[in-house]
Amino acid sequence: MLPTITPGALEQLLTARFKEGFLSLKDLPHPSAFKDMERATARIVSAIKNREKITIIGDYDVDGVTSTTMMQTFFDEIAYPAEWIIPNRFRDGYGLSANIISRIKGTDLAITVDNGISALHAAQLCKEEGIDLIITDHHIPAPEVPQAYAIIDQKQEACSFPYEEVCGAQIAWYLIASLKNALGIKINMMPYMELAAIAIIADIMPLQHINRAMVLAGTKALSKSSRPAIRAYLEYRQQEGITSEDIAFGLAPLLNAAGRMEDASFAVEFLSAGNIYDARVRLERLIGFNTLRKAVEEEITSKALQQADRNDAVIIVAGEGWHEGVVGIVAARVARIFEKPCIVLSENEMGILKGSGRSYGNNDLFDIVNGCREHLEKFGGHKAAIGLSLSKRHLEAFKMQVGEICRKREVPEETTDPEIVGELPFSEISFSLTAIMKKYEPYGAGNPRPKFITENVTILQADCMGKEGEHMRFSFVQEGNVMPGVKFKSKASYSPGERVTIVYTVNENHFRGNTTLQLMIDRIKRAD
View 1: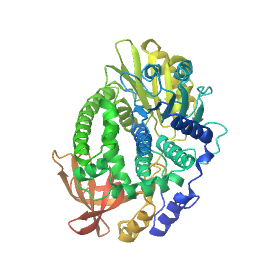
View 2 (view 1 turned 180 degrees about the vertical axis):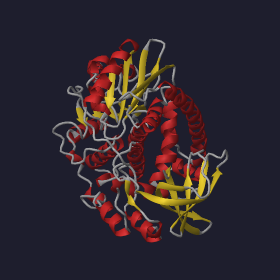
View 3 (view 1 turned 60 degrees about the horizontal axis):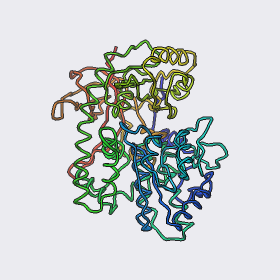
View 4 (view 1 turned 90 degrees about the vertical axis):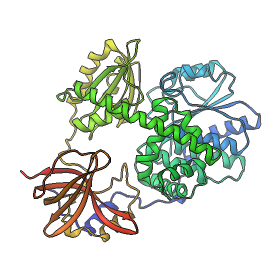
């Protein structure tokens, strides 16, 4: 039984999420708090002064794309001819790999962003080629780390940076700040903060401590940005400003679609566009990729659901030729449907299965699969999301071992949605409630938007809306208090007079100069 929530109780609960209080940019730790930051900075400065060939190696997700764009923008700003490369998901695989080394021959200094901490073999090849390697990454290091000139990764031992959950673009931002100081030059760090904010949200970093400060500053800057890509995006969305939720559900999927469907370099080129006309053309291409991504994702999700065994502790499904670019999204959708961790694998013509996994609830999927490394050819990730590859002949043994490890763990079961903060009577829903909620924005990972539950609600009206009737609009009443509600992606049927329990968030709906309160419905449960 959840407690009844009042505006005062909600404020106390939200305040408790921020043990350090609200940090601002002045609270950002110094770049030297990162292990190897000063060593890496000195090496890059030396390379610039000696006119050495520098190559940046990124990654194909939003974090990697924004990190690459940031580094290239910095070198452009100081008029230094650095090169950049983002591995192609399908031809090259993830991050710094043997496939990439042949393409960067002649490089004196290679700098990875958002990857490299697991690149043991590629680091050795760099050494053999006489390439100095600086790794900047934020993923969990394996027991053995690559041999590199410098490694900047807050999760490595002996790193004194106080925040463990930061993304690759934040480390790139810090590296640029360190280089600016070392070179004694004046550059505005706020355009780089814009890109870091996009990555923090897209990479699902907890929106607490310095992450919150960087996102608040970055989204504020994005709304006034002179970057042609952002101007083109706001024009396309017919918006004046941009919020963290706009990034999470709008901009980030567009940027991700390029790497998922074809090549992430298209996303870097969009973010780096020099004028609004170029940006518009590049945005159209990303929109096309995203439309295709949605269609392919629907098709594979349907096949995965048919194959899934709901009795398995970890759902593992595989299909021949499934599009590798969407298996991570499919895994997340299947995990939510079955309320269990899920791994989705695509089989290629060589009998190799490559794919992604997404966790669910309190399960640590990285730790579970880490116990099965003997079956895997490649593996990396973190608690909530993993990437892996294995030979088809090891699939059954892998499935069995993953299931055994998961079943042996005593993971506390989430009987209620942990994001529900309490029972909220309709009489307590007011603009004072939303005013309190606004103080704790932006919401996201680590600071979820508060969800409420209300029982004994009567449906007054239930209508379909949307182009294909895929959404629902409601009118609810409880003890004489009427509230409008919206539920997206629902084709269920409800009748006026039905009594239900609803789980929802409250938002302010701004339309034609009027502001009203409405419920964004998460779940509806009919009364027993």
